[in-house]
Image 1 (spheres, helix red, strand yellow):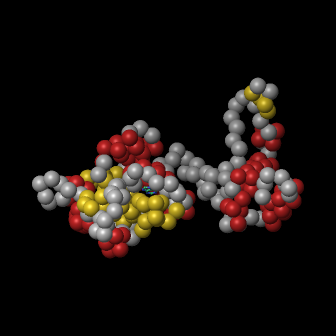
Image 2: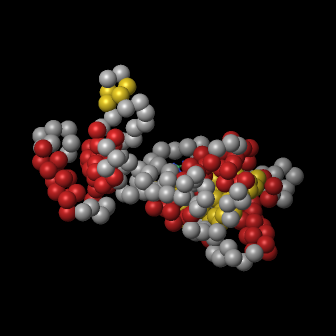
Image 3: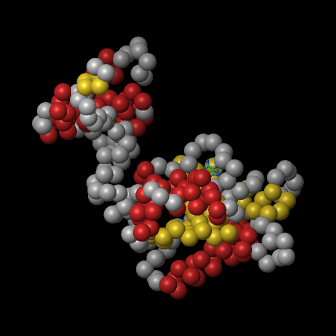
Length: 257
Ligand code: ADE
């Protein structure tokens, strides 16, 4: 069971991902538990103040360190009282300044027994949270959201679907785009011909080796066309390298670089 704890000022935003879909199955099967914690509940003053002006001036409010530190410490005390199988858990701040999220990071996170996600809001989070509390910072892309909540949901979705038993069949995540380092090959279902557009012959042939070869070639082609930089990182057979070189030469002077 993976235990996910989320610190946020808007716990109700997470209701939407905890209703039907893969999470529901994962939660019902006891494969994951998701707990949201309102940062405001960890304040001590009458008005439950979570933010304050920036030292040195500037527009926008900064999340104060104390409620965040105390929330994480209280969650950790609760986790380790329960069981010590959790080991060191990652404490992740969602921020546009974090390391770019990827399938590889999702795989890495899926190996932990739990994770604590901190969703920032407003103009930022007191730097001492980054320096002395957080073990990792993740960005889901080079654009700015109003808070870390949607980013946390993205990370949770990508991680939970990798947990054993969450997807219908154990290997259905293996061919996903990016799982192999390549984009996924084209997929077809019935009918074999639709509006005159036929499914590639080889897929109907029952020739498993032929299908596998076609798919791998399509994945290479598609990656070369759409995300050529991914090919620098992936291990290709010598045949596939030759295919890449051949396709690159063919397209010299055309749109594919
Ligand atoms: N918070 C605001 N923008 C974000 C982003 N791009 N990734 C992660 N957290 C964020």
